[in-house]
Length: 139
Image (cartoon, rainbow, N blue to C red; front, side, top):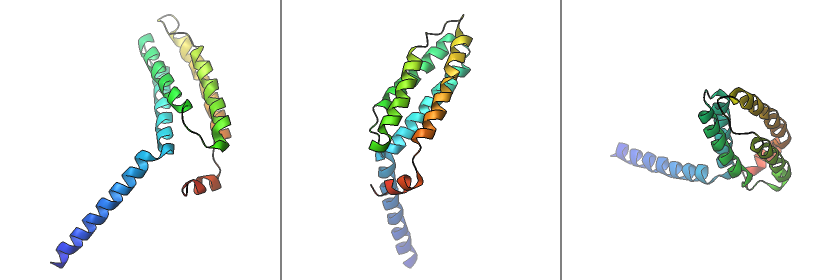
């Protein structure tokens, strides 16, 4: 009987923790932005590795879709200006890349690869400080 009670209590506790953390992770905006940025990176890498113009164009289109989502994100006031500046530069840069063809695929891939410098530059500029990350848990 005591063992059954313990199982029920542990099951209830597990369920409460699962519900609490699943709600937090799906409602947490930083996780959504992080997922969006990971998807951008994935499509960026796929475009660079594409062996066809169609694959390049498709992945670049997906990259642009996620980029627009990132631009619509509600950044904190401390990060908003620098983050949007970086994303806008990326958008202008990517929009200037012509559609890939069989003849220019390696050229547009090389052009796209230079965007990584912007990513590095703006990730350093917009990186939150240790105190900001700590305090964000209490907001």
